[in-house]
Figure (cartoon, rainbow over the protein chains, first blue to last red):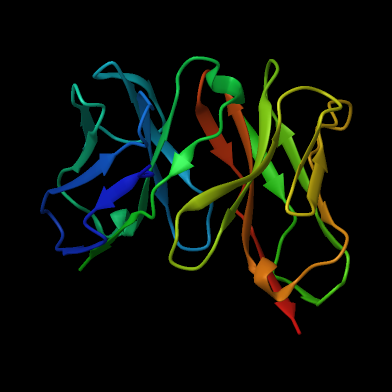
Amino acid sequence: DAGVTQSPTHLIKTRGQQVTLRCSPKSGHDTVSWYQQALGQGPQFIFQYYEEEERQRGNFPDRFSGHQFPNYSSELNVNALLLGDSALYLCASSLLTGADGQPQHFGDGTRLSIL
Amino acid sequence: GNSVTQMEGPVTLSEEAFLTINCTYTATGYPSLFWYVQYPGEGLQLLLKATKADDKGSNKGFEATYRKETTSFHLEKGSVQVSDSAVYFCAVHTNAGKSTFGDGTTLTVKP
């Protein structure tokens, strides 16, 4: 049973460019959340998708957008990249039902470096 | 909004020593509390959880008790091993899946 998979593993971009990160949730999960983890810090919630719609959003600008597909996989898009966007981007999946008590299952992340 | 405050690290212990990592939180309603562990180069893995007051979560010798009166969820282990070296994150889950994490505590266990 595959867990959460993310691609690519590493990515290098320059300021002003755009990037798309991808995530496939754990089998049976219907909800995907994205987090940004800066070096030495905890993950910061970006947004959550359920039934192909953004359900919740953290304190991130509109440059951060996403999408969820009918097969529950998801993409994170970041436009007009800034140096400060350099971080590990984590995808997590879960079941919405009873979600408060459900742990999230995390992928290994995409390391994004902005030059 | 919700917040989590973790004991600052890094923490360095000898093998078989007793471990405590403090965690306190601020949240509205009735959150669920989690400890996650992150090994180098990997994503976060669930270590243990507790979903209501006075519940004790446990796994792999680690324990934490949900203390609503002190809004705490301290992580403990009686005898740490070198393989326990990792970064530990305390987290609060509310609003159907939105999670707030602490900044993590790095644990190094020396033989």
